[in-house]
Every structure is written in C-alpha cells, then in structure tokens.
Length: 324
Image (tube, rainbow, N blue to C red; front, side):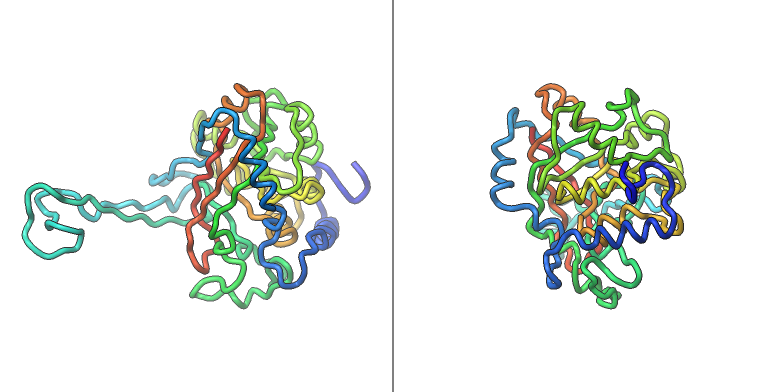
C-alpha cells in the first residue's frame, strides 16, 4: 500500500481530509455537472452490457420490504389496505359513489417508508450527502428545502441506470459465509476478488460488493446495524475512482460501523457521493444472484436500476434487476 493510501486502519482527520480533497478533483466534468459518475455510462457501454447476457434470466438484487420493527429497522415500512372487502367497496372505479355492486371490486393499498434506513434496498441521490455545507461538485446545500432538493435529486436518474454490473464477493475470497460486523473491505480485497473471480472492473461499471450482510441477517437474525456492520474502508474509494465506476452498491450500508475515519460517521458516503459523484445503493442482497454467476462462470451481467420519478427526492426505494 503506497504512502497516503492506508489500508484497514483508522484514518485520522487529516488523512481523511487529504483523501477527500484528492478524490473530489478526480471527476472533472465541469462546474455545471449534476450527473456525476453516471457520465461514465456511455451508450456504447450500455449496448455492450446488453450483448453480455447469456441465459436471459432475471434476478432481483433487492431485499423484501420489511414492515415489522427490528433492531436494524425501528421505522419499518407502513403498508395498509385502503379497500378490498367486496361488501364495502363501491362499484366502479375506486372512489366512485354509489352502493356496492356484485362482480367488479378493487383492492387498494398504500405504503410509506423511511428511504434511508438500515434494512430496505435504496438508492442515494447526489443531494443526500452534505459535507461542509456543500453537495457534490461544490453545489450549495441551501437548495435543499422542505419542498425537496432543487439540484442533484434522484430525478437525475429518472430515465433509469442501465449498464454492466460486476459482483465482487469478498466472503467468497476469504472462504467465509459473511464478514463480521466491523470488518473492512480494502482496495486489496477488491483487487483480490477480481483476480479470484476472473473479472475486471472498468469504466462505467456498476460495482456491487458483497459482504454477506443480508445472509447473516437471515441466518442469525437482525441486529443494530447502525452501530456495527461490515463495509468498505474509506481508502477503497481509490479503487472506485481509479476504475471510473458509475455506481457503487453493497448488501450492507457501504460504510463500516464503527467508522474507520476519525470524526466522520459515514466516510464512504462522503467520498463516493459528495467527492466523486457516485450514486450509492445500500442494503441489497446478492444471495439469489451468486448461483447464476457460478453457473455461467461469469461475475458480470446486465443490470437495470429504476428509481421512482420523485422530483426533489434525496433517494428512492429500488429493485435492481440483474440479467445473466
């Protein structure tokens, strides 16, 4: 590990600041840019990712929405039925007046969720991370009001994100079912997983890093993931920047807890979103994808991410789809 690029140890305030200042100079898209690393996703790379499909099988990378409170999910999704009993639903379209009619009825419902929790799969928009009062590309945070974000909202990805996904499986590299909470994924781990899996992360790729969080949760039960979880070490963002990754996702929060940077609780979020302009995907699951990757002997695939078209939103629930 070269000087200035520490591995798994904690970064001092000065080391983190130096890393942040260096990485924020990497993108170079100009002062008016609001798309960040999505600029790496050129049409030719998307077309090439489509040609990469072998089996034509689609696999979800999302965890099921959790509507029950748990140690890692104190504000679960609220789902309620608003209509559905034939004896009480008016005839015709929902909301229509008139007495109940036999035959046609409608079941209706609604849900509410905390987008940026520690259990449900979601996308972080570039406006999500404010550092020193600024957003990505030195945009002032004063544009975030009670009406939403005026710039860098999830609307940047309104047309979806499509590209070549690459899964790097760190527990597989270490011969483990999962990493334990608090363990770090370093740049050397990412490079080692590439070599072991016979794949190389490149420009415009959607990089997914498996730490086994979702499998551990299923097998051992939920825990306070806000206090303790496996994730990337801040220095691993050098790898992300060097390879010109378009999107970064994990089956954890991407950030390790406790933090590996003195005085900064979510250093990976700061470096990825705020410095590099990389949209993050938190709390995915890769357990359904891994068997398909093993079957075809490939750890790359077409990936489609479709966030909600929510003007001013700081993020969105997502159901990323891998096509192998």
